[in-house]
Image 1: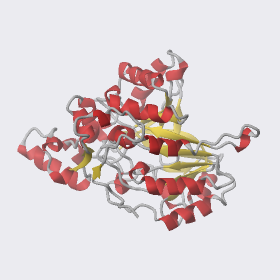
Image 2: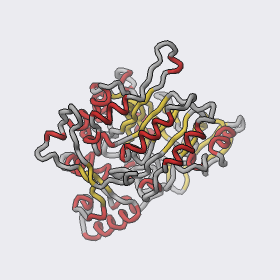
Image 3: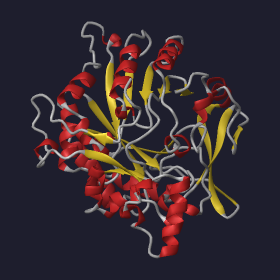
Length: 408
């Protein structure tokens, strides 16, 4: 079995490939730079020795990690730096370590989660090649949590096969592309299930490690899209959920890696996180979504940054996202993603006519919302009571409270 974490990353061209990355002189290796390496780039936002000491404390609690490819992009883009480099502002927070992880207790099998009736999450690998400062899975991804064993994958697949109402599997992380061997083993097993037709793989490696998307890897991923021409109800497909937040991320190597996938018929759906000082304006959001479309990627979700601890300085208000969304609704419908925020009880879709209902507690704003999900069904699926700050309405639905961000 291969190691769970590869600190050095080869950049092979792949059979028949003419990749931008491979053309670089010497075929340089894209490697992981850990915060413990004390690379000066991790102190970019420290303006004094005292702030360097604060960043050391921050990295003890929320580790920092980038790749050398990301570092090269950061040299040109403040918007990428803000997503990955620790800030002294992270030391004070009102966020929670687990803002949206209710489903992790729904199964006794490590790595299998279920929060919604029609889909499950499977996490074969809990680590990432780079750590986003706004990651809502900090409590797991940044803590060296082990991935699933092959035996646990087998057990999970067996469990999912017994869930009649489940039709989809989201393979998430960490980043499953860090261990292709385990990912492909999982996909092979899931494809054998008669009740599973929709598979999504979530990855940010197209930005952090674009060189791993060789022809061989892309061909293998494409093999999981299996149409049935005589009975479309039996068709199965694999899509990839990608994650780009700013136009500066769409470097030539990144676009080429994405094209290798889309040219093989793999759907790429992008999930953008609304981030203060990075993409919280109409021009940036509009440009990003337009560029994604021109390069055959679907603007899928525009996620409000979750109230995870340490990310307060990157969180806008939901209203600011709504103002951006309203403007997007006046453009071509093809660039309009789903704008959502997520209390622990599930996603809330925001429409152009949404009116937000606020309550104030301990000096910060909470958004009060009656959700689409029945409380009884939530408890049955998640196998636990409602999360804190949630209650049951008179007609049986979940009423949730969501910690809003700030715009000042």
